[in-house]
Amino acid sequence: MIIDSFKYGICQLWQYKKMWGILYISLFVLSVFVAYPLKSYLEKTIGSSLMVEDIMKGFNYTLYTDFTNHYGDGVSVIFQHSVIIVALFMGLFIFFMGGIIGTFFHAPEKYNSQTFWGNSAHHFWRMLRMTIYFLIIHGLVLMVFYFTYLTMCNGFDLENEGIIFSGIKILSPIYIIVLTFFFMWQDYAKIILIQKDKRWVFNSMIYSLKFVISKFKFTWGLYTLNMFILGLVFILYYFIINSFEITSFLTILISFILSQTFVITRLGMKLINLSSANNLYSQFNPNE
Image (cartoon, rainbow, N blue to C red; front, side, top):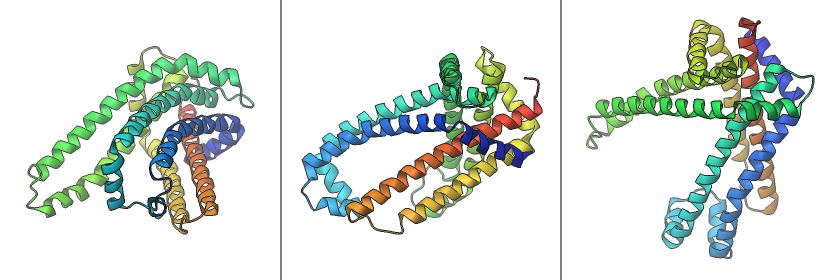
């Protein structure tokens, strides 16, 4: 059942590749809005400086400190601008979420703009409320782990570095597992919100939690499979991008193509995850 749902997700990704392209183009356009002010600012400040060559070699803390000391005000303005753009992107992706899951659920023969855009608009406010609720939940979980960590480390006793690092080693994997569970729960809550088309968000959140726990072997297995393959993509990209130095226009172009390929692939894996989870839920609830 897990493998079948995963294969189904791959098929739907290709079936609705136009939707995949719309999401990528939207992401790319917003990225340009973020990158352009930074590009213009760097050209005005260090465009003819030898700093450029040092930046291309990778992160250098000394260089970063010198740059922020001389041009810190401009960087802070760009950072604020970027935060706004990121917030807009999150809002846009929340808007798209209803269209994505709606398309996977209704499963038209090919990409249908009315299904995509109609579901995006119809479910936006409920998706937004659900996202806010889950952000609050994630914040509470983070606070629990943070105060647990403080307790383990005796309130950041800097005289005992061993306790500090051992606390990180113990809590980090536990936090990652818990965080993964909550993200999985959130995905199924979105799916159930679309399939049941209920007005009250909390009903979908409670129902999805019950479903995830009752079918944990299947939901966790499928989510782990998706995350494992995504992890392989990250590792492959990391090794490829670090296999050469960015020293010329050609290597910059290759790096750009690789980075965009990675973004497209990562976006595709996100869609496969949603489609396969939607299929898994539908198999257990065929009448909905």
